[in-house]
Image (cartoon, rainbow over all chains, first blue to last red; front, side, top):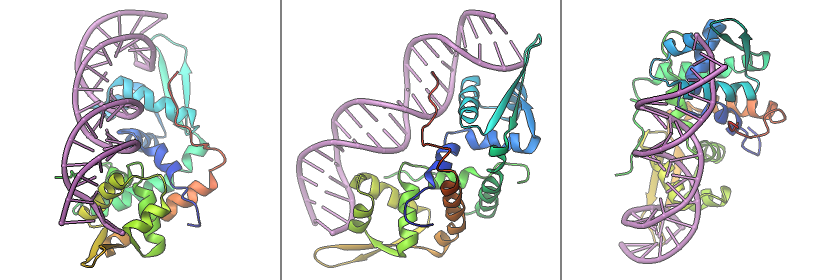
Length: 111
Length: 111
DNA sequence: CAGAATCCACGGTGATACTG
DNA sequence: CAGTATCACCGTGGATTCTG
């Protein structure tokens, strides 16, 4: 926690309405297909799922394996680099669990 | 890291272009005035600073002390509840420091 | 000094339809 | 199945001006 603020890099990685949820599921299941992620996150659109997965891939947090079959099959897995995010995610979840009562999810709206 | 995803509560707390930076400075200095925060975060507008401070106050992460003097003086401090965020912030900063090299801050833009 | 009040631009998100 | 492609919305953030 020295001089400059470096936290934004992780936060940017996890910011986006669904990004941490996607990561959460991939961490739990080790490997998931596109359709499996859709089922686990019912309200997400294909577009958002694709977009966020591409961002993760670009940041080398997950890897994308394509099985050239019919019908297509694509699997997403954490990279070794992505696994380094696990401690952070766990810390976030612990905090979330403990304080779920106090923070009722409402973002403050200026009157 | 059980069943439901609770991480979003912390993330919402810290999401917003400047929120974690503000919190970072308040954590370091224990107590800061409005104008001091402005100096520490040169590019922020008063509006954004005010907005985010109000959100923190509403979430009981910081407290706002008004000294009824002329000119006005307002000090912001972490609440006990806010101090519980320190471990998280430190984790985020550690990660940020270690991976500053790899993540060059660019958010992926779909081509 | 520490804000409140507007007005406005932009980008993230969503809905829908189409494709290899 | 696993995506693209478009279009439209709306909330966050920015610039500016005014106030106690």
